[in-house]
Length: 153
Image (cartoon, rainbow, N blue to C red; front, side):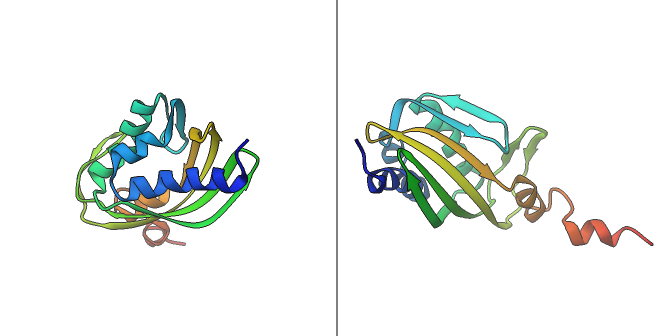
């Protein structure tokens, strides 16, 4: 049975491999039948190849994407990571409403991943992040100050 430190190591490896742009290392950390559930976008995929593909699709829009783990805890085979994602949108971003062209803007997106580890591999990941905040930072939707600037009282 894996210790909580082992579970945290696997969870951290996932973020580190993504941040360094190392697809092979990222994929090697996944169970063959791993599941990734990205709640903000509604994407849910299964299988190490599909999880890698969906995860790395973010690097097409944000080639310099990097996650900094700001807090981590584990209980049993589950790890919870608080992450600050940062990157500059220099490529088109696929959204449910169509492609968002490169903005050249830098974003900082708070997120949480809940990761279940089995057999020393990432078995399941649920990713929660602030999609609205990201779109506001990219200028795709008005931010709070922009929205209130147009209203009169």
